[in-house]
Length: 106
Image (tube, rainbow, N blue to C red; front, side, top):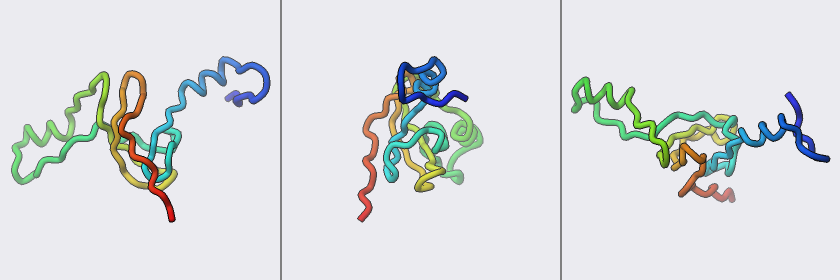
């Protein structure tokens, strides 16, 4: 794989690498490359398994909206703080909104 050049003009391969980087705002670690995290999918509320029928339970387990636009997602920071967090991401532009700020470490 080509390295990103810091001198001269960028190569097509280095531009492709930059285009594919998604910085995800972890609330503890700050912005992290998406390769440092695990995408866990659309955030959904878990129903009480004692008070739902099989259809509702299957819907919770397997059905997602797969919205084109703003979606609340769950991520896991595997190479940093090792915590789960949720945030809003536009699935078309990969823009994040209302992202939590990193916790100040004292």
